[in-house]
Length: 369
Image (tube, rainbow, N blue to C red):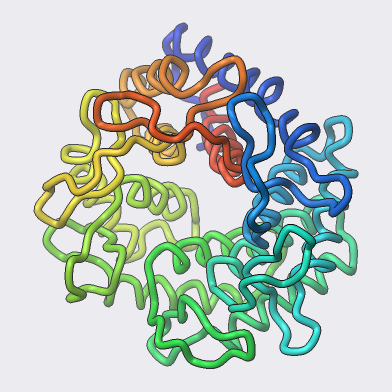
């Protein structure tokens, strides 16, 4: 947005407090108790007392999200060093030297655990490396970005413009088919790559992906982005993903005005009408608007907030959502991950992956500051 819109005084105050809480209460968790110094990896989650949960695994996707977090704050004390450590650990612990690509997870000792190759992981590696390279301009980072893009194009790509969700360690076909969420994060990764360099191959892949999503994933009556290909049994949509897609498409000069953008813009009102109740962003609904899961997740609220920032005349809704975020989800020790239908806390841990959503939300709200 080129010109910040006029804001209500309370809106500016709430946004400032959100920024301060993120910088002073959330980010430091992953510089201190959330960091395993021995393995140079972020713990998967902290409990309410800031103690790491018993280690079952470390995921490459979580490391990539933390790389994005600290490379986005690289000017702050210790952030550049942490980003560099995360980048090295991504390569050291997760890269498959034999078959290429990156393992899904390693165990408590840092040894490969789930050795499958999944698109969600590789999309976040592209996303984080593109963002990090844009900050540091180091050759090794760009080489890793290029390698990840090559793997995506050569291994995951399908003939229909979509991408397989999961493949075996040696790239064997697992008949996973395409799923919405990995495709979305791949689109996000392509957009981030194009934000830091001119790349015609990535641009073409992004356009083809969006065309394929419009064909195979959009529910035509309401413009909803479905979680599985259209026609799949027991399909559903998630308002948080609907709002996340809206932000990505609305802010992209390349994709704004595309058929997919038109569908998602149309679906916004339907998702908002059925999926946002009394300031609560609900987890999932069926195509008819019936609630399947009323859980309130902080990431979905974060996506709704940054989408609202792009909607003219949404100041009152933004204020309502910032109030709800501050009053129900943020607390002195960090944040609450999930609330149930009654508003009670239903998940007490703080995952290492959530600060990524809060960071991108704050980036999207910058125009209101």
